[in-house]
Structure formats: C-alpha cells, structure tokens
Image (tube, rainbow, N blue to C red; front, side):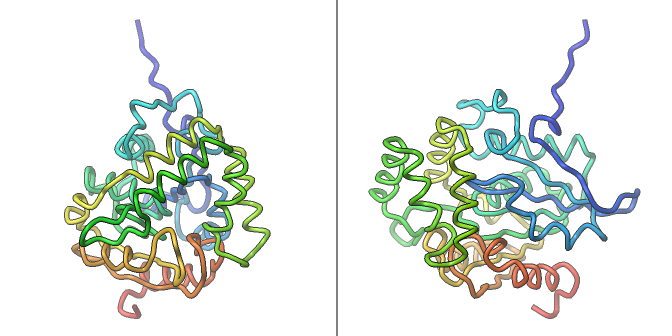
Length: 276
C-alpha cells in the first residue's frame, strides 16, 4: 500500500513568481505574527526580475492548511522551522536568500542553523530573540506585560487586534496599513492566534544565535516598541557575520511603513556589501 505524503507547498500555501532557470537563485519570504504572505507585496516586485521568489504562509495563517496546525508540533518555533525546511526541501532549494519578519525571522534562524546549506544570506526584519526582559538582557517587555497582553487576547480577541495593530505599525503612521494589519489579525483563527502568540512571546532563541554563520542583515526600525534597538544590537553582536541597518520609521514593520528604505538596505547587502 502506497502512502501519500502531503505537499508542504500546498500546506503552507506557497506561491512562486519571478525568474526561473537552473541557475536562478531563490529568495524566500516569511511573515511574522498576525500577518501572512501578502505583507511582502511592497518588496516582492523588486526581486522578481533576478530571483525565483517564494512566499508562504506559516501554518495557521493566511490561506495555509489550518488542519495541519498542531499545538504539539507547533508548540515551539522549531515546529515552524521544520515546516520551512520541508518547503525548501520540496523545492530543492540551496543557497537561497531568506527574508523573515519578527518571529518569522527567528524561525528562519533556527532553520538555517539546522540546514545551513539551504541558505546563502539572511535578512532579518525587526527580529527578536527574546521579548521578555531578564537581568543583563533588554527584550522590551516585562513578564507582567506579556501576561496582560495574552490575557487581553483571551478576553476579547477582536478588541485586542484593534488595539495591538497600531502598536505594531507605529502610532499615527499609515492608517491604511494599521487597518490592513487589524484585518489580518481578525481573519486569523482566534484559537490558533492565541496559541501562536504564546509560542512567540515566550520563545527564547538566544542560545541559537552563535551557531548562525551565514551572512546576515538586520533591518531595524528606529522606533519599535516591540523589538527595540537594543534587541537588534544584541542579535548583531551575537551573530558571527552580520550587520545592522536602522531604518528611520516607526513601528515593527519597516517593510510596510518604509519599503523603499528597506529595499535600499537589502540591495546594498545583497549586491554591494562594501556600501554598508
């Protein structure tokens, strides 16, 4: 009896565009909490001429297969890293450029530590290896802040979405983007969103950072209360081969609020490294 293995591409709603051919390098985009692959729409067109562009949804987000979400398998970021590696394996990707946002960036880090041959360069947009402050480490939140945030999600998910989206996007900036992010939160299955939020905000990937040797760019917003500048500097110091660019914008999503500045930093890193 034959056993059919579910397609990772279908499961993660993978969409491929751009250039093709045996020598075409791939660039893979992975979103963060509350988003989906559409969050990259302002960046993707800039890469389609040169790269095979791969965008996907985390399982539980967007148009992914919600039945594939498992509280056990996805109880840590490692489960999502496995999903990413499954996608890359199914596409036979090696030496790809990876671009990840927030917790998606850290999922990429975990995947690259496990299978470095699949990655040539990493772009981490507003990453955070640990959100909670500890002695000697400033993550941006006290434990009680996270507890209150999660309690608000449990009590009134839609209300929480409307309150949290402006914090992510930046106060008084781009109201249309705030509404887009709010709608993205609301579209997400609340039970999955609550679970993934706990996985995200209680995650601690600091121990993995020294094992990432792939050239890495950290793109950080100048005013981000979710992943403050101190977090970006910490990650930059821990990585073996990295550099950090601060984008003059507010909020946690510079790829949406300042796409041209984000693209400029990425272009210098990918093609003109000495300019950084």
